[in-house]
Length: 537
Ligand code: GLN
Image (cartoon, rainbow, N blue to C red; front, side, top):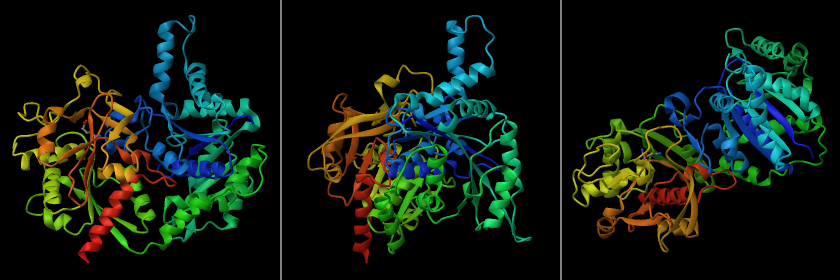
């Protein structure tokens, strides 16, 4: 069948969950046997979010092919179980860069280069890139930002043109917000009407409206929205708050979102989506009664989205282990030898978070020393793993001044050091060691048992590495290097055997945990945390 393009735009306010709606629709179409991919177009000038502070944009997600991407791509993968790539996330910066490169090459043959048609053509070319591979029946494109922003205009113009060109192979879903005014006890549809009007002004008539709401929207109100916005009443769907984002595919299917999309795009279909395994996961969420308590030690503790993929990986692993997740953020900046027992003592397992730079680093060492000495199941991820190594060097190897050269360029014991290939790099954007690399695990190690294999591929995002010159000292003192890159011999996993669970990974396993395939290492860590909790009873 010809590829169908579905655009998802948002209005009224940001953070309505366009990514979750896009992912849910993808899940439903996949569960009906269609081939689907989701891509995100972000209207900011940065080439990618790799250089953005988490305070600006939450977590930076990394695709297997080494692209630093918007965190919505994490949702796409968690819901669909399909790898995304560099092609799935395009920014205004990337579009302009490519147009300017073409202009410098002389590709425009003396023409004046303009937003229309050159920028919009480049957007359209990128929108169709994945569709043109012939691998997909549906390409869902989420347009970042909110309708009405100056930045979004070229993207909306490209969508307008594509709708015209693609006819029935194209569809627009617009997500808006319906606030409930408590004093008046009324749901208000005016912001939705205005936002649809703004879309219409740029020439786009939405086919489907999804209304985010905290209260049930009665049929009469939906009909009113339909009437004002030129949308059929059955295509006005509500997205009401649910206990977990993983229920959204069901609430969307309950209102026939998938069928409406299939009908409107003239796609033949029959029967129902097969959501058996998805429903099993949801049932597990509902039926779990015991909690497993995990402490996440990091510096962005006040930010919901900074450790998004770790949260979700822990949640999935806890759910599959029939437990509810009680996740507590612990600010590494506040940890001291005096309060660490009180702050961590109550936990069943500890995660030491990834990160960059000096802030909060000493607190991570305090946490790690306490965890190691008190045999707390502990999982260090990326910077967390590097901190495990440094703490071990300082307190077990007796190298008090051990450090990473990221934190102290003059340390005499550079147990974590800049990778050789990083030494000549001066530019910050997209230059880390990024994406999936092979790793060989030592037979008999806890990690190899957890994975059930010795050969794995995991995603990376870092510049610094375990310094192999110290390897024998660490191994002699009990910290084993149990995972290494078969080509470069870079150490990717350390483990202290004999402990309940004390493992650090240089890679980020959280990027590849999905609802249908929870990550084996998070599963094993949660099992160890539950066992630790039960042993205290
Ligand atoms: N700052 C460390 C490095 O660059 C770790 C990065 C991370 O935790 N993602 O190596």
